[in-house]
Amino acid sequence: MAIRLNAMKRVLKKTGSIYLHCDPTASHYLKMIMDAVFGNENFKNEISWCYKRMSTKGQTHFSRCHDIVFWYGNGTPKFNVDAVRLPYAESSKKRAGYAKTSLGGGAPESGVCELNEDGRFPEDWWEIPFIRPNSKERLGYPTQKPLALLERIIKASSDRNDVVLDPFCGCGTTVHAAESLKRQWIGIDISQFSAGLIRNRLLKNFTYLDRKDIPILGCPLTVADAEDLADSDRFEFEKWACGEVGAQGLYHEPGERGSDGGVDGVIPFYFSKEGLGTGPPEKTFAVLQVKSGKVNPDNVKALSTTVRQSGAKCGVFICFEKYMNTVENNREKKKLKDWTGEFNFIQGLSVERIINGEMPNIPGLRKAA
Image (tube, rainbow, N blue to C red; front, side, top):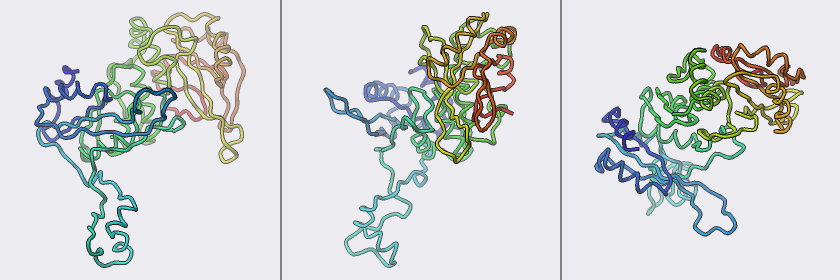
């Protein structure tokens, strides 16, 4: 960690800030490292990010309901206090006479203070809830942070068109927040899956963007690159393919190895035969099977069984183009149809087509231009 923090200090402007998130089990160690790298004189705040968490039966300690965010500068960091002021509670307004002066005019009552109409001064105690399990914001990434948390950080310490760097960007919450706030951004992650997941997240949420607007360095850009990755590390190849086609979850946690039961990734989607406004659509998913090498007929036939056993709606088989005839000749030919159109129960998608920007034919999945 110290080596990476030194690299971040090297590129941090004198008006820039660095925020480091951790949980209380590591915060005391990381505070010492941050002091050593950035200097304790550049320490600005230890922020407690607070949230609610359900207690469990037989619990032997107080519920752990906060994480730590350290804020350091590298000189004189920006602080846009007005951008992150918080609204007053109604009880606070009444105690200060704010409600009377706002509604009826005149000065506050004697003995009470006048509140700043822009809101109360932000404190180092942030109550921002976890993402709900059924939220559209949730992408299935184990360490995903709430968008509201990153938006508050970015608003506080940067201006429009400033550059935001997240060197551990995971599922891309920081770059999502930066794009929505009109900042420039750079995201870095060791996972091939993360790169594709982030790009698809941005394409889904910002329709003015296209794949060519989001260059990805270090991931396959050509078929030859994909072949090299498949030869060197088939697990990273599988994760890259899953990320490229919009998977919002993996059978494995990122980096985990072992038998996957025929499921390399999943793509959640909504299925409705009747169309919008005719009742709640069915929330379902497609399973992905990725083969980095030779494909035999049994591989393809097994995907139908996997789809049914997993409760998925359909399956996508990903491989190189030279094996697509095997997929086409052995896949189950059943078709499904919803109000948006028809799609195959089992469909093949070649790496070559993925490189060219094609996506699986799944309802609601945005196709790249």
